[in-house]
Figure 1 (spheres, one colour):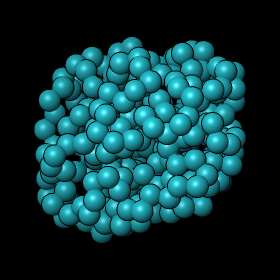
Figure 2 (figure 1 turned 60 degrees about the vertical axis):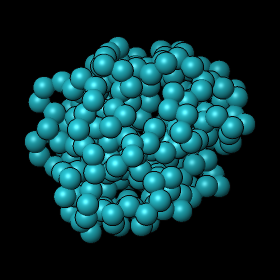
Figure 3 (figure 1 turned 90 degrees about the vertical axis):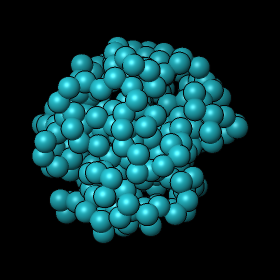
Figure 4 (figure 1 turned 120 degrees about the vertical axis):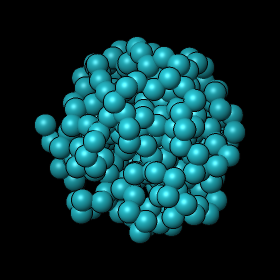
Length: 262
């Protein structure tokens, strides 16, 4: 979720996860289209991958924010998207203006829907941000909602946050992430899906390998799917600039939820 146009199509895997990718180890957005999100694709109905996709990943989806404007979800569904993640919150003071329309629009068109929080470890502790996120994420165990997701990576350019690690030490960052995921689990009974990049995670958490029980969502802006961040040897979701491969043959919601409870 590096530049805020977050329309990169996604990939969600099955019961255990399998992930991919690496972006440049820089504090600046590789996409540089807009702050905090994925690089834009010009057509949300375009679901064809341009990067190498591993075999056995037939399910695709998209992730979005207000930067896509009004989305025609029936068109997205007709193009084959099976799931979506929409930005809900950032830090302790930002609610995405398009979240409710995106979240409901996806569900109304038969697309599994999830919410994500853009982490701002420079603003508060992880517990407070998890509470803020869940207070606005409309999470429900209804068979149509994906598990909550934390987007933690480089600060978006212009955010004013210290880059690349928000001014936190590796131990402080690891504590922040644990606070967030523990609070989500306490309130929902679900493990948080973690969206991150190897080139951010390893330096900023000190190669922390203790979060492997959480499903991993990783961006893929190259043709390589490895190495994965410390602690994971598989990924649940993966994102390229234009498409997302998914290993699951059943629904994302069923697979992700089953994975989170193991």
